[in-house]
Length: 150
Image (cartoon, rainbow, N blue to C red; front, side, top):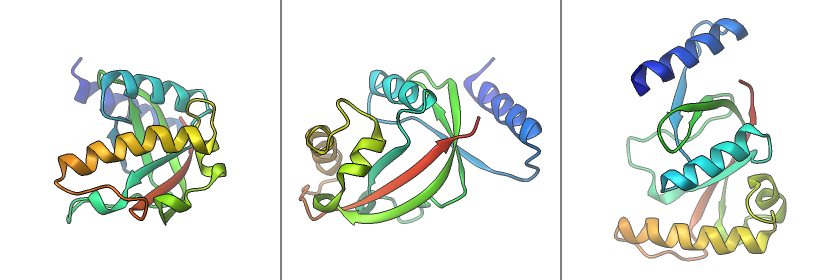
C-alpha cells in the first residue's frame, strides 16, 4: 500500500469511528529529519508531547496557519500514520516570551524551558538560514496546543 493510500485509509477509519462526516485534516511530520520525526511522533502518540512551535514568519503567503478545532495526522519519519491530533489552542508570541509551561507541553528532553530554547534556537536558526533570513529572539512563534484523538 502506498503512503498516500495508507494515510487515506487511516483517516477514513478515524472518521467512521468518530462519525465525523465532512471533517478534513492535514498530514505531516514534526522536525527536519526522519529520526526527529520518529521521536516526536512517538512522544505525541504517548501523550507526552501535546504542543508544538513553528516559525510564524516563515509560513508561505498561501500557507494556512493552524486553527483551533482542526485535525492533524502525525506521520513518522517514513511517512506512515502514527496518530491524529486535534488543535485546542493557537497563539503567536515572540520566541523570547515562550513560557516554561509551553516548553513542558512540548514534551521534549527534560521538558524545561532551557532545554526547549537550546533545541529550538538551533532548529529555528537553520530554518531562517535556509529561508535567507536571520533568527532573532524577537521572531514570532506560532505556539499550538493539541490532544491526541485517534
